[in-house]
Image (cartoon, rainbow, N blue to C red; front, side, top):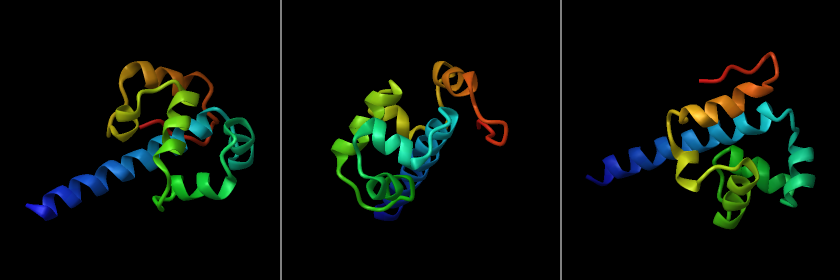
Length: 97
C-alpha cells in the first residue's frame, strides 16, 4: 500500500514539474525573468521545476502568478481553461500536452 501512495505522489510531483515548466515557457519567461517577476530565487525555481525540495510558499506564489489553484498544478491533464491560457502565446518549440 505504501508503494502505491509513493507511486501516486511521484506521479503528481512529475505532473507539477511538467505543468510549471509549461506555464513558464508558455509565458516566454526564462528562469531569470520568472525570478524577477515572482521574487523567488533562481535556484529555488530551478529546484521546483526539477523536483528537488522546496518550500510550499514558493509553490503557492507560482500558482497565484499563473492564476491557477494549487491542486490543479498536480493534475496530469490541465482543464481546458488552463490549456487555453497555455495555447495563447506558446513558443513554437513547446508542445502543450
